[in-house]
Length: 110
Length: 120
Figure (cartoon, each protein chain N blue to C red):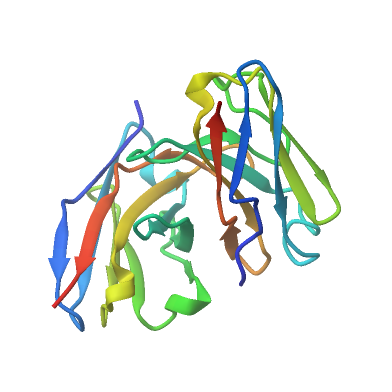
């Protein structure tokens, strides 16, 4: 199972919006609406920010939103803030009770 | 509150085995599956597999089949991950993560991570 493809880095200025893509195949992202997104600050465990493609867990800012088109899922962070600087990973069900992470994206707030 | 507390740092020689524990509290242990995820230094997250805390069913990542075993002890609400025939590229931080009650396909709580170093 190959990792889902994400851009290595994305940057934006405070207040701007950025979008992180997560490209899989018709066997994972394209077949299921089961993509979740995680934020990871250095030295910390990941934190769930989006599940089922576009749903936000309780307590997560509404500046985080998710979507999917075909084999590509996307995470958008609007109103970028300094605290959003972190690594972000997508994660998808891949069938037969297996799962796969994305390659990860480093978000820099300029 | 939900907590997953993992065992401490491990240093192993190539060819050895390591067993990491993950003690859960704050919820009904048998109601949610546990997954294990690892992260090599400076690298991304890698899904290793999951175990049903209800009946012990498991599914492992293909690249770890035959070297990894995940178990649970429901009497102590603890999950275990054992990795055998360790290699240098198994050096990583190992996390346990609780499957959420949302869709059952994401993680809502994580352990603090257990660093494992494999070196001669």
